[in-house]
Length: 333
Image 1 (cartoon, helix red, strand yellow):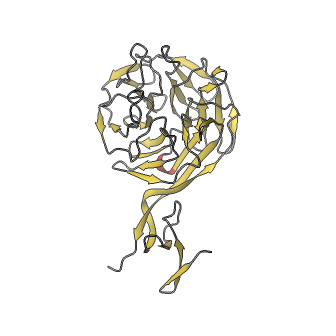
Image 2 (cartoon, helix red, strand yellow):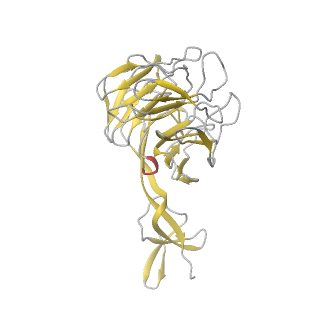
Image 3 (tube, helix red, strand yellow):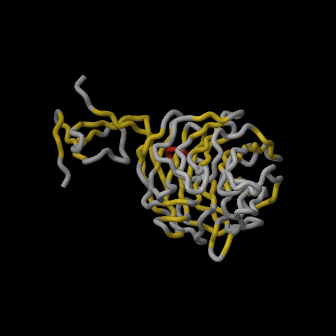
């Protein structure tokens, strides 16, 4: 049973830890730290992950775009092989829609539920430079990247202004720092990442994007590297609290981003970026990696779908919702 403390006539609930959700104006007593605390507007998002609908085709190593209530998931591996499967999400359930023209895995995607890009991917040694554009009904092939790549390069933006970065190229087993910009018609080589890597999380829009985490080589440690794109070049910024690859990321700009999941080992950790630093927030319900995630929403709204969950391929969906709050210790000064 919860204990209560009385402060000048107010009943204040006792909690053993700071909460993941809250309402501005609430007060409580943290019995572990022995401090009275208050929840105020602003700061890191206080939120939680909730279970959603199960994807119809269970895949891993696919990708996604859209938002928590209007999502899109496409591509990946669904035994016995690579799939072109595409599904939309309405916040409650998944619906099968028209497939990609060509199935692929290890790809990247960006955009909204009605206007997205499916970029690169494929099997090791046969990565593609192919790009397809989704108009809400059908996928159409558009101009290719200049450099074919796979192993989950990062991407950000829309169908008229996008960025693709990192990954691994066919002729080189090493990862790449290559970055390309899309203007709605064609791709142009631009300034490279400072740290070459694959399997990181991209987020944001042009000209304000982010690439975080990833992997530089088999057997190496997962990276905590964080780089910001300003429309011209990449700049190194504050690192993740937990380095990882195979993670998901969502954000409207490079100052409002949520990243979650990843490996090794498979993790449920979630972190929020405010443009300056990373803050750990409420975890996913289950450790997850190589899943589809939403492209927009950032610290207050995100979607994780299918992928590997607790070590097995799964169709499970989780959605994140939050408000921005600060937890402040109550003092007498």
